[in-house]
Image 1: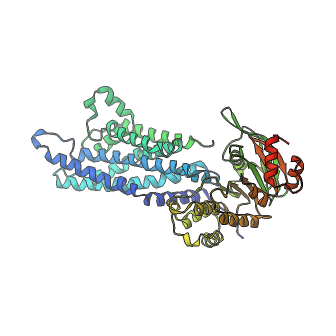
Image 2: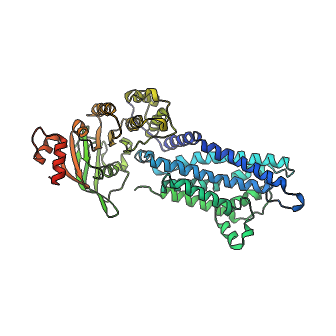
Image 3: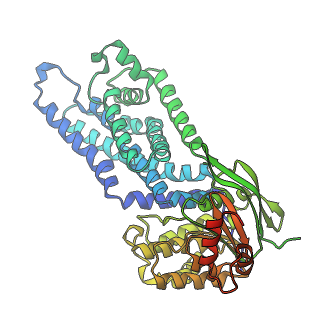
Length: 255
Length: 246
């Protein structure tokens, strides 16, 4: 009989496959990750259509609102991943995995990589819808810019996924969704997803620029030509993404 | 020289804050035998298992597994372990078959499809193969959880309260499976069912408040507790609990 032999890559792929199956079979994933952003886009389109052109209000035009919805929707990944990880802990499934040859970093990436793939799919579909809306509204955004926004906000999506893993590791399956939902709400305010953060004063705006959400929204808007480029934005998001994954990797390694 | 896959535990201690869950326990488990940790709820059995399979870092003491390459710590030989935790540890959105295959992939088991069929049949799960984890009854979920632990043909198997929530027939079926492992797999079993320990274990350690109050074969426990030769394990256990350490 051949002896057992597993490789690090094989284990990460096995755990990723399991996460994909769990996410695909959870109706919440489809509703919130793929349907909800479209509903929001439709709602903001409706609001925009009711604003008379002479008002000069462009906040709800696809070029502004698109990156906001893109970054806001990424926070649903925090919710899914937190639910999945905390649920595994509650069901002792994670205990089983921790006693297997897989090391903590392997099931970290086993959760993170499929969630990020779902995030890219979500972002691609959302920004394709934004591009199509822009064509009908006379704004005509560049498709390359829309897809560029998806690619350039991958670090903020990675942050959301890492935060989900961290919350799932630290909180119970009852507490994790509540906290993740609070983060979701915070992200919309602190990310300036559908409002100008400067309206709430300089201090508020400064706080927003050092958190991961607003810099990501601003990069998206820059790629669509509706905001200026701020060089520090990319660094802020990347630092948050790296920091949260390191924290998640270190959390509860061995109890 | 001990046999391969035997377990040596010396002065194992684990504390959670001010509470000492496992208090300076030492024992040996011979390769291919069934060793039971018996005790009431909160006696420290699960904590001891967590230390033994590398899930928890002990505060003091040593745990060694005698392997082909010498004595190794738990963290270094997890590919040889199978664990069935106290709660059902299955992927809720995965089918029975997918849960088993996942174990095969993580442990790098060769010929996974054939092994899956074998384990499904062994645990009477063939008809439930496409049922998702969350839709399984308590008993079926328990069977799957144990089947997952055995999928990789582990050299050391940890069964933490394996028959908790199982009906009598399912319990007896599991006993047969554990019996069939004797000689090939070292089994460490925790239970608070006296008849289970009596039926399965070659040696039994009775745990009380984190300590080993008595340890040995059934005969040795009878001697240690001063009960007669017909005394059941339950009689012995009650005597030990009432009298403290023997």
